[in-house]
Length: 273
Image (cartoon, rainbow, N blue to C red; front, side):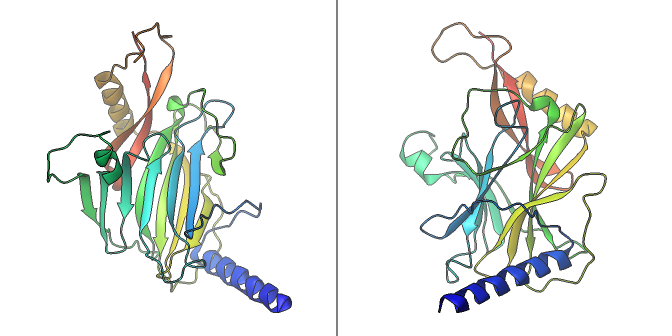
């Protein structure tokens, strides 16, 4: 019985590897601890920089792992570590996607909205597949200029860290969805943008969901958005005490039309007294 299980597991691993290779993505060979909850939820955490040095916001993508709960829902969610209980992006299997305040945040009084009002901040329909047969679902951009050293601790968290790309560059995390029937393609190399598949898993409906990282030059449009965001915000110490002018708090700037898709820019806002 044990030998049969080992054979089945090996076949499943080989099938998954072949499917992704055919899709043009190289799967990292390093073994990582799978982040799966008792309810069958699989999580992919990712962030720019390093846990012990300058870093960006840590984001979490999660959904039901079809290998654990094949009869579960195929919705995918995304939130950052700081505001995950307040705000999240939902990529529903129905194709009606949105970023909204969570029901729990409203019920707990963390966010006040009018009775009967929609919690949605923005909504959109699932975009069409690319010519290669994939759907670019969402993008998170963390510019190198926005990496900061903080007192946050990431111990115990299985995070995919992408190192600082250097001045004038940005790390893009791209959430992709791929249908069960994948076209045959040649194996992709990292290329000039250092594209890497950080992690992936198969949803109950057979689709693959994954997170790809890539490094590119910060566009003039992104620079303008960051400057506008920083200029609009002044953060005061809630305790009323002195604040180091060089201190930083993290803020996610939700934007539409980020390089042709829905997404956000992760920025650092300066604290002032």
